[in-house]
Image 1 (cartoon, each protein chain N blue to C red):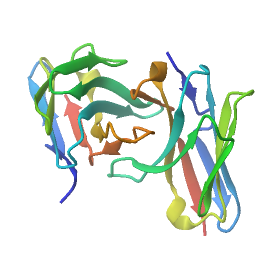
Image 2 (cartoon, rainbow over the protein chains, first blue to last red):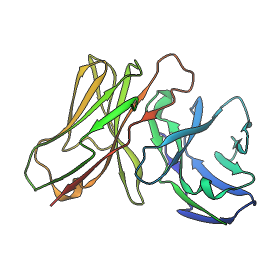
Image 3 (tube, rainbow over the protein chains, first blue to last red):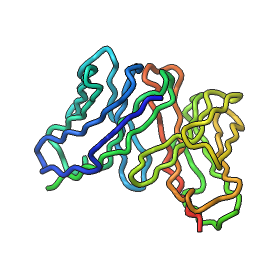
Image 4 (spheres, each protein chain N blue to C red):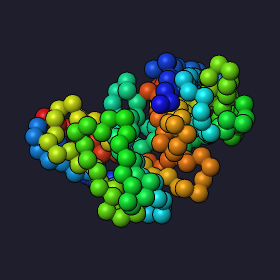
Length: 112
Length: 114
């Protein structure tokens, strides 16, 4: 089964700077990866996705990069804002299905 | 009103009790999921259902059961709750018509087993 790993449990960034959140995976069989954002006392909400046929997808301040040879993806937030402080999860499909496996999450704190 | 509604939002129970967490959705999606979140472990898949007659085990199904009563309803049961089932539980749905299969989550049910 697909394994998705987020090796940094937390990250602190100054407001206005770039936040980079990383995710590694072990299986090459996928169609999409997804990023979710989660605030305390709320359910995760979808942020951005990337297809396996692309190496970059951008949506406003959020850009996801995919490096297939390294089995690595990253989420860039530029410029970071205090409201971006949340836990971010990357997720990949297991066995090519719509059964998503999530990483352990990275808690981002943007300092004003 | 939320598109994916979970009840109860908070529950404290004792070891050995039977607990049911309920999920209903108004999004019209066929696929429904139950995840649990634990500190440091992220979101782990318990069970999922791709339509009313389909039930599948996820990563951590032991100690849990589910029922898909209708397209819009998917409930999770703990037949005999134990303390290590204390966690935040999320229901999610996804649409068969989207390429990504993006998940839509409920607000969560916090369960404490004493």
